[in-house]
Figure 1 (cartoon, rainbow, N blue to C red):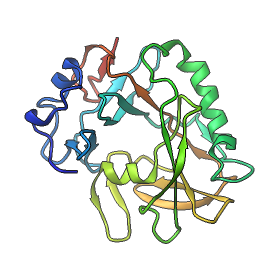
Figure 2: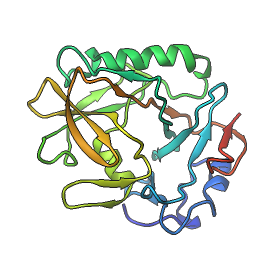
Figure 3: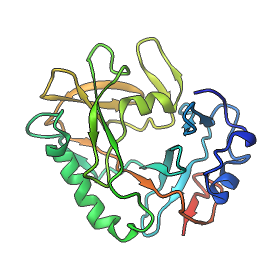
Figure 4: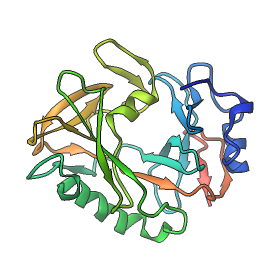
Length: 238
């Protein structure tokens, strides 16, 4: 990250609606931060008023903007939904394509999001990462997966969203909301995968039933019909 949010560093490829949404809508403790590649992350701890809430058509649960890539596409994560729980897999956690949680994510997409395909990026590049038990925030990129419209948060993205990371890797992030799976596997531990709970990363048995929060990409051309990005007035996708 190279600079905190300011009006001047809004990426020129971000839509005018999104630029207006971000302008003046972030507080001193959390907001939009620009990276060296021209992408942006929403950063803040759990007490920060990070105004990145989004309402998708037909979904009663809100989503939040994780990041904006260098092309202006929005990566968003759904709010916690206790009805969305899954084991990770019954095989190898590093084999993302074969995981049970991906199968459940794909089912969720078909049931709830397939009708929004015109605004969702098709088959984006999902980075496949792993990390050791002793250092869960230092991820290794093992490849990528493009045969899916939907995925999960990665350990490093939690770190990037945090306004405060301790020496032991705990993250005071606005993403903190109870136990939830990440998309980062445990190095050399095929029967384990990472989940986070209140900013602490836990290596857990792959048969542990845990909440999963769907993640998708919205196209840079998406339009908005209102809202300010707060939880009470989310940015409404039209």
